[in-house]
Amino acid sequence: MLKLENITKIFNQDDKVNQKIALNNVSFSMEEGEFVTVIGGNGSGKSTLMNIISGLYTPEEGKIFIDNIDVTKMKEHQRAKFLGRVFQDPLMGTAFDMSIEENMSLALRRGKTPTLKWGFNEQNRQLFINKLEDLNLGLEKRLTHKVGLLSGGQRQALTLIMATIKKPKLLLLDEHTAALDPKTAKIVLDLTLSLVKEFNITTLMITHNLRDAIKYGDRLIMLNEGRIILDIKGEEKKNLTITDLLKRFDESSLTNLDDRLLLS
Image (cartoon, rainbow, N blue to C red):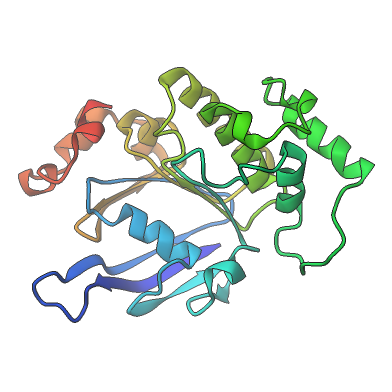
């Protein structure tokens, strides 16, 4: 479903002093329905990887395929029809001044040709109600309320529903619980797992939390200095502990792990 071939991304390429190799010849692939968690310290390349896949950045070298389609040269808005994405910041991913129903209507039209006809109808409204009822947050009774009135956790849950309301080829979760309190983060993560399993969604989740990286997903990838230094799945991942994970890194790798990662 996703394939990266020899991806290299360099920032400040013409400035030898400030040049930064964010991704260094990275290659990996994901099968349909696979759920991969990605960890790494500050500057390891996690966010760059996500932005390369989404089309925000163009690699200096390499190719990107989504569902066997070469999307390397596609702009971000052109790739949107393939992708669902939830950001770290609850303020992103939704339109602040629009209602819940209006936001969900926009999500339902992802990938369609824009028209002057607004997409409200009773069938869609019932779909939205059904989706929101599963959250147990009472949002199905607040369809006309502006999204800006919701809490961070409510917005992230709504954004997750919006990102999956039309099954994407690939779901990108960019530390989507990092700004939430532990209780709300667990609710959103449990919802994530439920949606991914129910619809068999191919999912790539960046997290700073080692426990979440081990608990969720079928496969774990660790990035360091723009390279993949660990890629495990199956029984090896199921039996992994935080202690085991930390032991896999040498001292040079550990110096790049931030406090959030170590204290999670």
